[in-house]
Length: 157
Image 1 (cartoon, rainbow, N blue to C red):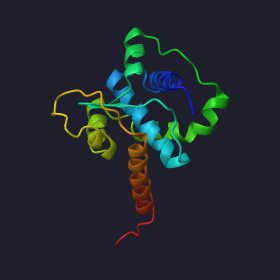
Image 2: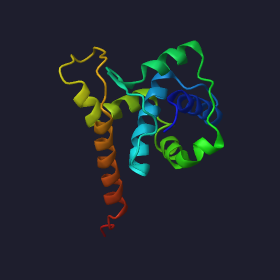
Image 3: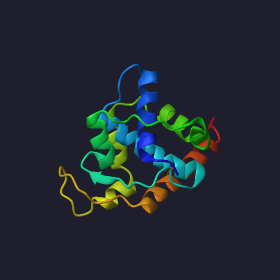
């Protein structure tokens, strides 16, 4: 597992390098969530141990929120640390990084893990309820199954 601050820093720097502008905070949280889920899909293990909170616009890592606001996402992942997760990061950037933050928020609202953590929380209110790692694993399983089925569909003539 990796240090979540290093992962957030890596995503921030890579985003700026690839898109030519700083990543906004909401998009960063969503890409971190998708990276966590993608790690379960590809490697059957979490990318980092820090839990997300189920805020009104989707998963949020409070520690990262604070560091982002202070401009302190400056830790680096070494090439050795990145190597086992390179495909995870590449998939997240390929599939999600080009989307706007509000679209990513909508996608996370469809995740069982976020919905389960929000039970009993009024819509439009933030919550410090934690998103369970096992629920993210379940979301990952659904995505992995969907990808498998889509890759094995035969075209209809």
